[in-house]
Length: 295
Image (cartoon, rainbow, N blue to C red; front, side):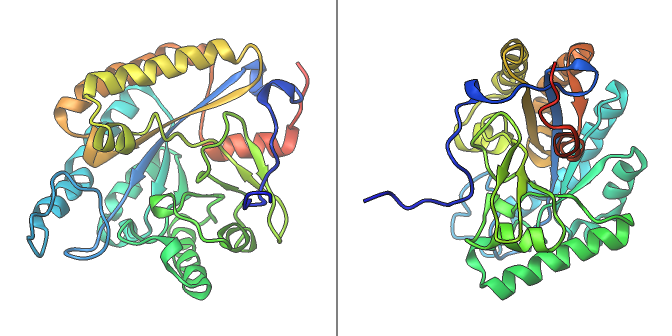
């Protein structure tokens, strides 16, 4: 009996696909994704610096996460500006109500805003279809009202999806998602409403699974970013690839980690002539409009 399948895509070996190039003949597209998240106080989900220890409300972990919005993000922004690095902001829509100055700063740079739910205190997969639809509409409407444009991309809070998430996103006008980490190229996801693009989003070069789950040190995480880009740049001679770097301000915005992240970001800037340094929405648009462009 066949195993249960998601039915979203078929198996395809990366070595047997049509070839194409990114703009200006580049073979590796690179983007930096900065997650901006806001959490409910004393309830719901949230990454943890330390076990709550029975404390209710959990002041320690809430305040640690809030450090990212108050301090860490501004230190990181200074580095992005210094190195002239484009960024995609994966924004909980509650950020617009809690600390709109943060989004204002990235809007002034022309950075892309990607939908990331209302708050990372909740998961889409825990909701009914009507509740999930409401979540998507609320988050999207907030971004659209504040930015003047509808977001193209979505990353579910906690990478959570229900069985109907792709259909709900497609119906709301989204063109790509970041939730799937199954490939190093843009792929199509089948939905009942038509195709949705999946832009690769890293779960290895991502500070939450690396630093918080596997306890990777700050220096090692910076080395991981550099090694990933250097290896994928070499691999991209065989096929065009996408490399993402996923960051959270309350983790790598901590001073001792920022010191090492700076080294990794400087490496990104150093190889910019050899890569397409961009944002995920531009990757999705280019793939959609000029896919399978021959070398």
